[in-house]
Length: 125
Image (cartoon, rainbow, N blue to C red; front, side, top):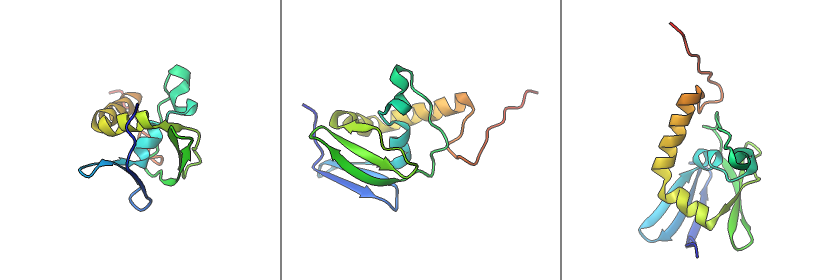
């Protein structure tokens, strides 16, 4: 059975979702991190993940329970189709540094940017 957070706090100003599991176990998950790791078909691509880019400014505007097993996160870019199960949220919390490093590496390899106003140009010299 997955662990359930004892508190869930949406911090709109800092664009983070704080999950508390114990007094000394609080995870702050940035909206951008959650958006690019959404479990939705739009992101996960039915088994072939689709790299999300240009999401540095995305924020969370809402959090809703989805039954007893998940949260529905509503992002200000209109994305709201991913259901974040308790197990998935715990994994994102515990593996945040590793997953973020992997994401940044994938962006670099694809020549993409976190900034939607930036285009990466590769010069062949």
